[in-house]
Amino acid sequence: MRIPIIAGNWKMHMTPSDAVNLVNELKPLVADTDVEVVVIPPFVDLVDVKKALDGSNIRLGAQNMHWEEKGAFTGEVSPLMLKEIGVEYVVIGHSERRQYFAETDETVNRKVKSALSHGLKPIVCVGETLSQREDGKAFDVVREQTKKALDDVLKNDVTNVVIAYEPIWAIGTGKTATSKDANDVIKVIRETIASIYDINTANEVRIQYGGSVKPDNAKELMSESDIDGALVGGASLKAQDFAKIVNY
Ligand code: PEP
Image (cartoon, rainbow, N blue to C red; front, top):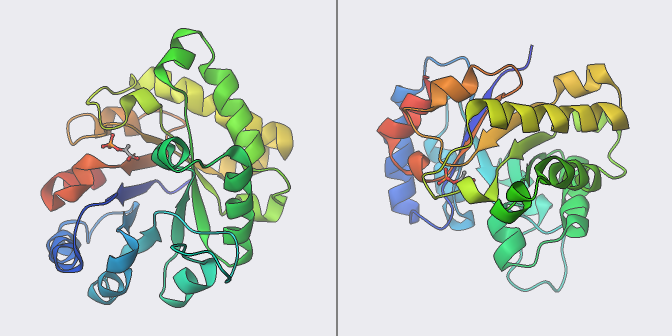
């Protein structure tokens, strides 16, 4: 049984005080859920949000990290730093990082391995562009991204990885993949994991859908056989909306 994981990626929104207000509003609204709930604020909010989450069922994630523990990498944040302040999840290879900050499959793979070796659970984003989908290449793209992200990741570790299937054309656009289309791609991701490891291992890995998930489409998406939760952007910035998604 895979426990669904619903994570709110706040992107570059929320000052530390806004962030604390948001989690304080969210805490009682999601206190009774059986799904795993994660909030993913900007780096500068993490310490305050961690304190505000004390005693709650909400877990903490970061939006990115460097693969090195320390060094001359101005502006970067290391896995040791995240671990020490109580971060549990880290998003790796979000399409905005691939698009605007030159993340490649190779840097994604380095970060995934580093996160795992530091006891952080990576949420690895994969997904096709609109033109790749129109050219019928969606399956090939996610297969390739998944293989490269998991290169040299051990079988014992891969069950700590969460994959987020996020078709790029659906992020922040209000367009959502149909639940069947999303499930079909997610099945291909699971088959890819099975081809690297084995089917039992693949069946343990949680694979989320992300891309304009909202209170009114969450239930349909989450009812699909292979969709194990959601990575939510815009709708995670309002406690009421995010809570409705969590309580789908
Ligand atoms: C995201 O940023 O991962 C995302 C899915 O955003 P949105 O929900 O706003 O489409």
